[in-house]
Length: 252
Image 1 (cartoon, one colour):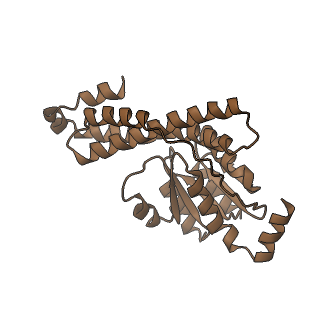
Image 2 (cartoon, helix red, strand yellow; image 1 turned 180 degrees about the horizontal axis):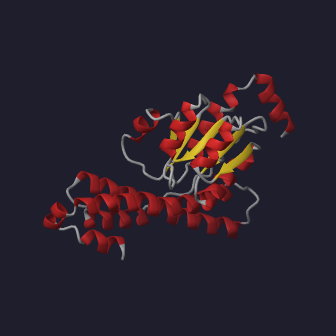
């Protein structure tokens, strides 16, 4: 069933009797649509940072990025409409799709300056292999030591074994033990290093929710490379002595 057909079922009367269906729908949109968009946009944007691409391949990645970005804007507009009204506004969603299709912005030609950080280490915790692949792809240019875990249980086991990381990137929604519970258990063990939530549920007020539950920051999926870069600079690079930073730059 298409999203538009699903939304058309929310007449004023039906909305009163099926509020739980709307909540389920919002959760579906957030997680089930934003998660694959994380892969699409992450791979496309990462490759667009490669100056060695041929014009033909670059043009193809730009089309992929534009299409994914347009869909992301439509999803965000749809969620805003759904939260502001008793029912999702189909016309608003259709207008958003047309608007973004007509006004597709160019992919920024500015390159992110990714500092070499061979002194840094991160743990990525996510139950989906595709999300782990994207996170590794985005982090590899920094020269970090990258480890992964496919569940909260595995992440906790690593910390219990004495592992320490500059940053733990923790998926918010995982089966059996979600990111919130995992972060709490890790904090209860006395672990004080930064933990950043990765979430496909980008609702207003999420920042306060994560900060109150053991996280230092949160990054919405699809992952924005600039936000990721800022977090790495702040939580890894800027905590190193100047001579360590300069030595890493000299070896690049």
